[in-house]
Amino acid sequence: MEKPHLDLNSIVYRIAMHSDEQAYRLLFDQLYNRLKCFAASILKSKELGEEIACDTLFSLWSNRTKLTAISNVKVYAYVIAKNKALNELKKISGSRVSLSDDIDVDISFHNLTPEQVLINEELKKTIEQVVNNLPPRCKLVFQLVKEDNLSYKEVAEILDISVKTVDAQLVTAVKRIAAVVKKEYNLIR
Image 1 (cartoon, rainbow, N blue to C red):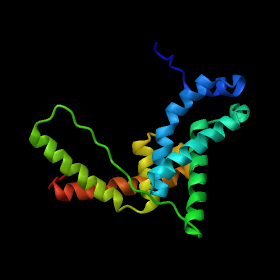
Image 2 (cartoon, rainbow, N blue to C red):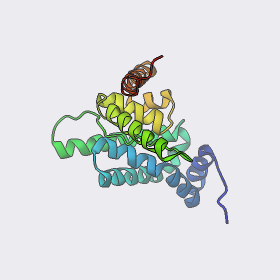
Image 3 (tube, rainbow, N blue to C red):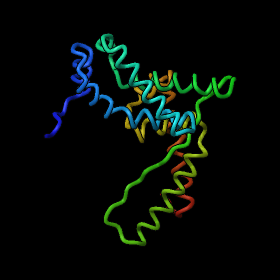
């Protein structure tokens, strides 16, 4: 039997008002992988990322009666995950920490010739190298906007920066990627 599709607001309402475990499972399914990757990118550990994602989602369930007061639960979950990850980094390092991450850029290509696949793999590696050399905050903004499909406003809320800063960081990332790709592949525009 197919699960009914509910929007995030409906899911949150059912969790908050009825302690609906099925709705919580839907929320878990929607957010777990994203939160895991986000936390793992900060902590540079898949296992710790999984732990942070579970802790974050457990926090949402534990405070479920208050969820309807939160305007954007998705952003709220990212903020919880960020704070938990930074606290974990502080425990590990015993000092002040800043955001940094490794980003896996996933570019999918279907129905291509072997030559096109090879060229696209080279392009993917080039882009990954550029992204990995971006400043930490710039990489994180790029990941949240381009990979997690969050809006500039949501990213600004999660990272506690302005929307203009998100825009500036993304412009920096895209310019650096474009410059290297143009140079590597002799693209002139």
